[in-house]
Length: 382
Image 1 (tube, rainbow, N blue to C red):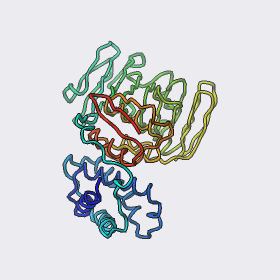
Image 2: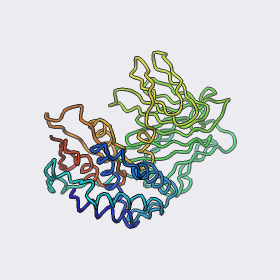
Image 3: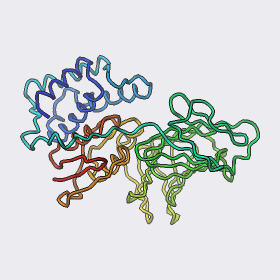
Image 4: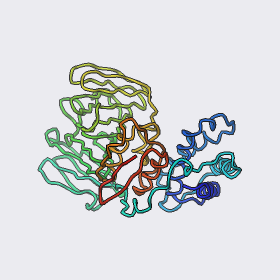
């Protein structure tokens, strides 16, 4: 992207007139710029902190409150001021952010067949075997089983309610998302689960299984569990068990991953492997279970939960790992040229409601790789 285009977008950001796509590009380039020019850290103006933390926090707040519109973005005053500071530095030429000095511009033909992002959608499979496509189902009650009522809300959530006596312990339901889908589920105990693309959650309709609240996860889910000391909540995935009484955590257990990643936001959880190795993790920690051992490390929570908050946070992420995430959300196949090494990193932050080309351009701006879209295939080369 040319320096002039960056300045124009920064000006719109400072004025509060930037579109959602322009905001996504802006944030992504700020991330890439900081990574490329570490001297940015030494400037005591607070602009980096405002862009990296405060701005992003406000974006998340507006997304969660349903205030963020597709084609407009209104910045709060303190954020506009911070963006204006960045604009001054761009405009003054202190930072010459012109990646053309390092790479050729991507061929415009590479993106002629663009792909739209994923959407809210899932399939509910009832104990009877009936399958309900939630994207097509009308709002309101969509199913009833003995003592259980299942409803779809106007904002695209699936809600279970227990009414009177129930034999739901043996009524097994599964909520599954395909590639390019995501959905939110509210269980009978009011616990809330976000399902990422290409994932599934299996559970009894009453949520009770031998005195515990037990679910089985394939893929990735974010959990906000209602406290109930008498009935621990257990998440099973690929032989691992995560047991909690009430807390917020994320589990990534895709079959194409090298390990199950359990990340804790608050409270505490116990992670047990299929070999009976176990660890108790604290907020800000992640347990990586490779099937043989469990390793616990501190992690950046925002990076892990960006998908749930509507974004891709690719900073410092292995390129091929990032492309797995992208392929699931856009339902595409990724094909690598032999020249692409395994150790490359992606970078930047961008909204998940961006078109595929915007995400690929962000990664491509590092100059390390090039992309070409043909149908639903992405070709990656050096």
